[in-house]
Length: 145
Image (cartoon, rainbow, N blue to C red; front, side):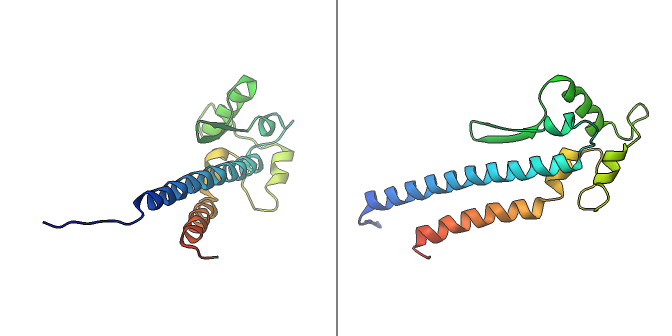
């Protein structure tokens, strides 16, 4: 029979609980930061006429979840058409002057799937933010500064 005794188990458990809580807090902060990034990138990628669509791209936080999207009103119907129906026969096929002007610098293509692409085209930066946040918590836990 093997018997294992751990000295200071309550203190170790308390430290692990604190570490877990810190990682959760850091992850929540990073989620909000990433959500703001995706929101601003989606606004760059959405067509622009009167800024109604851009202004309606919102960041929502509920129960630890961060969502970027459009939830109600006329903008929702318009967003659905612009986001999802670009190449459908009955979809839109024209970018206005203001939308074309947004495409000039080449940083973000205006058009369909503007919210999806806001995430996909920034995935490396987003992953890096999560990795940095977790690594910082691990360093702090280990006493590295």
